[in-house]
View (tube, rainbow, N blue to C red):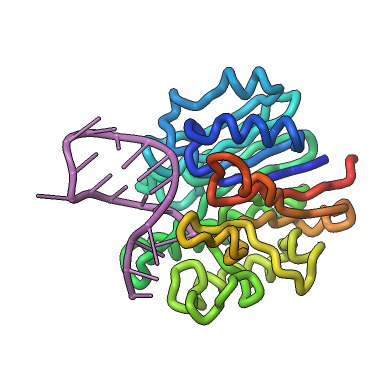
Length: 258
DNA sequence: ATGGCTGGTGAAACCAGA
């Protein structure tokens, strides 16, 4: 089965491209981020017509996450991370789909750093680490997929030295990512492509896609029990090259069926 | 260091993204 994550950068503007990508690649599960649409403006009917059931947490103008299931209806487990009732951003949603727990996340960008937005990113990360730890303790197969807004290593950015002070690459956020791997989570793309240059995002500015000046910031972390089931992982670069593309490309894993 | 794109909002000398 194929599980994908895709920051669509506006599901209203991206709907044609999203439907075309679903039709071409037919992921069994897709986590979407940056819906940029209020709850009532999610294109539920169009996705149903395409064969996908969905749960989503919308928000006007910014953020927004969804989980799609081909030929089924995801069972929602939670929306929002535990630990801060005052946090109203729509950035996390979790579902049970078959034997899998799927967490879809849109981690805060955090720029400019330092500053309040960066502080929010670090506090969100702290809560996410706690929740990831709780999930790990459940000893069930889990996939945490989404836009992490974290560049894990120098290999994951076209010119590392220009990004040292950026909120996506600062030591604190890279350390948090390392701590997640330390919990036992498996970075699926990096595991399948060690040492390889792989990007998932290219800024619209300055012909960054044409120059392949990108970042690897969209990740699928697998619980350790899924490691033997991991068959493939990759990025659908063709979607970034299409008409009116998102600035992110869909990223996916292929797991052996149970 | 910037913000030359892009989307959403609402009418901006706007904001946010990464």
